[in-house]
Image 1 (cartoon, rainbow, N blue to C red):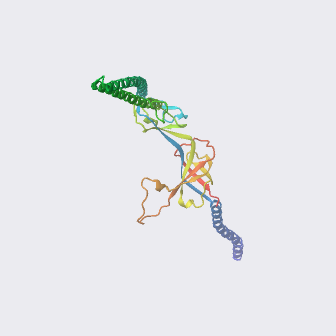
Image 2 (cartoon, helix red, strand yellow):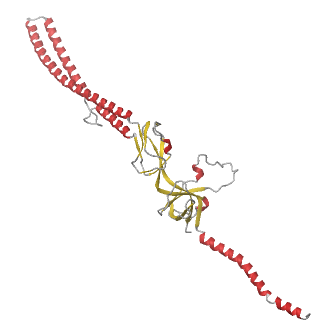
Length: 348
């Protein structure tokens, strides 16, 4: 039994060497495989850049009234879907109907004034003709008195009276002609509106403005979309001209605004393909392309841009907004502000 123990130990040690070698090979190959896999993954994805600092953007049209007044009707509510031309709210039209009536009255007054001027102008023609007849009569009378004066059959006083009457008749002709010129000038029209009296034209313009203001009391949707912030519209509320009253989100046109690090822009170009995923819709994956690259970093357009002129600052990687156009038709509703993840193939 004492001689058998060494033989058994030799036999038991013989198969241990290949197992240890296999373990050593395995332990050495695992790091190599990990390094190789990491290298292969890096090479395969080296031309991709991505960011999760991206959000869905949509056109947001702020609607305001072009005329002021009290709101008498609200036709929409929050999140209603509207088409272009649909009524949103209505402002009290009564003051603007009164403005139309005032404009009509101004036009009527101008027309009466024009008729009066035309009558005056016609009257001046009669006055001129009458004054000329007087001139012709007193010229003959003056000539007759002058001839009698030379023959000694009249007095100088009569000659002077005839001369004065002739002068007075000539003055009446000049006055009548001046009145005619004045009346004709009052009836004249300018080159901007030939054939139309300026007062009538002003009244017509006033009426057109009143009609336009009346039409503007009905505020309609300029685009199709979803109504937002409609709680600002309340019956009886005074709407101030130019003050936003409601917003329409044009949901039929969406894009992604992705804020990429400045170090990702070296190989980024307009037109490169992009892949878009959404936090709200994990199963949704859309294709897109780079539409444009921002002209400035986000901090440049902030209300208070960073001021690092003194040099005592920690350098922060800036982000540049990149617009991504969605080329696929989304199967889910796009909501403005949704978080997204964008991956761009820069194709180095």
